[in-house]
Length: 573
Image (cartoon, rainbow, N blue to C red; front, side, top):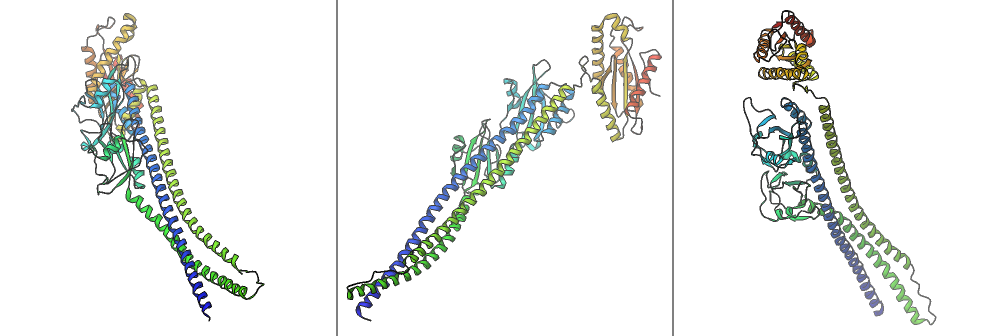
């Protein structure tokens, strides 16, 4: 080999090595820049998606808390507008509590704060006054429904509770007291926290006074705590429902968190929190997904650069050979680089291969975003279904209240149970007697010579007489724990649970004597005063003739008392 040929070989080898290094450097730089750009872009997308998700969950959580409180507030407000008689309050409270199981307690208090009825009921003989509670004083002062801040209740283990209350109006529309229901503070957001726990999200809820109502597990707060004057408190005070905040030491174990805070329509503040480690984990997974294609791309670039270098050496040798021929021949042949277009095509194919791998990385990112979108849609569907369930239950309560209003069970003249109320009480007490294996007694009471009383003194005086007798019977029924109803005209029925015939006779004589002792004047009665005749009967659960036979027997006994001269009692045969 001549010196010129050796120099050309060294030059060619040097240019080939430079070409390989240049191509490899270009490939590495392209992969590095693309990877950094993709990672940074994806980090920004992750932050934006996280902010959007937390903002949406915060808004939905605020709506859920407000809807829960508003629906329970509507229940006590409707109940306060009914103005039922005092004896019906336990039943009304029980029905509302059945439809709204979040109520752990419910009560009705008069204008002085004395509890008239409660569910669960107070111990026998005990009294309670709630005039010192805000849920009593606020409705009484402003005449509007009220949602309390969280406070520690007197019962149920002194657990933190939230109360909703509304003014109670009597039949004439005057404020007569307060209806109140209490919920455990955790029950205000129980469904919401159950859903959020599946997504590794935490919830912090503050009331209008800045007290903690609920804090998810892992947060260093408990109900009734007040936040220290730190950055978390500032973020909650300036909550806008959009801005994503990063706070160090947010969790009890010192971990950092990302949060979005918003304000509910009632003025409570709610923060939805996710561990910052979750975002870092997602970014590490994204980095791994980018590094693997990048590594494969580097290998591909090295292989392509080697092939390109080999293809580059041969054309250069061909150029040198052609140049030598040009030095010796005056008529040189055109320089043709055989295969040069194919080499360029291979280079383009290598870049296409690299772009294809980078495209797969982009598709992985898009798939991750699609999964996140599906999760958000699932959460929205669950929230929508819960809102529909709340609306359905609210409609059921409205229909039940309308039915109760239409089917009043109280006699308008005497204030005791009307015929429908008496029949319902009879069916209920007879069923209880069968279940407990105890007797049930019935007293049928008729005012003597009442037609003559009406004819002589007029119907207004007759109505007054009915009210007076009903008041005497109502007082006696209260003492005997009996059910009283007006079955029609001047006839009343007194139902006595767990009484045999002897006990029924004793109560019947008390009824007769109480009316006679009242000494109400009756100008057309032989005795000159209002008296009653009473027929009584008692039947045990073994009697297959049923409740109708019990009333029929008491009726027959009443007729016998009348035949024997009135103002007396008679028992069933």
